[in-house]
Image 1 (cartoon, one colour):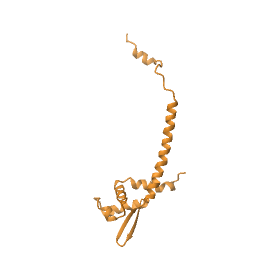
Image 2: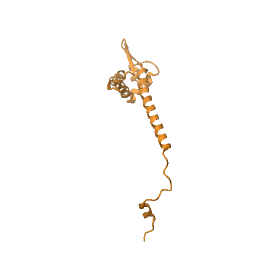
Image 3: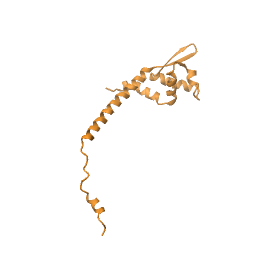
Image 4: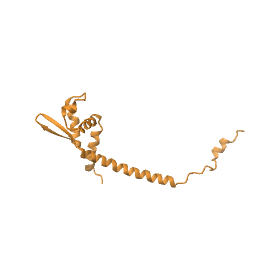
Length: 130
C-alpha cells in the first residue's frame, strides 16, 4: 500500500539524487567522512550554497552530520539508498513480469499468413491504367 506519508522520504531521496553536485558530494562521502569545507573544495560555489545542498541531503536521510567544535563533519547514511534501491527493484520486477506476459501472448498469437488476399485498393493500384 502506497501512501503519501510512505513515499515522502523516498521523494526526498530522489530529489537529492537529481542534482549532480549532491551526487558528487555523496560519491566523495563513500570514501569516508568529510568536513563541509572538504566537500565544498571541488565546487565553484559559495559555502552557503554547499550548506544548502547538504541540508537537502540530510533531510533526505542520505547524509548525517555532526558538529565538533567549529567543524561540521558529514557521513553517508546507506539506509536511504537501500530504500530507493528496494523501490526500484520492486518496479523492475513488476515490469519484467509484464514483459514476460507480453512475450507469451505474442508467442501464442498466430502470425498473419503471407497469402492473404489483396485489398481492393492494392489490386486497383497494381492493375495497369487503360
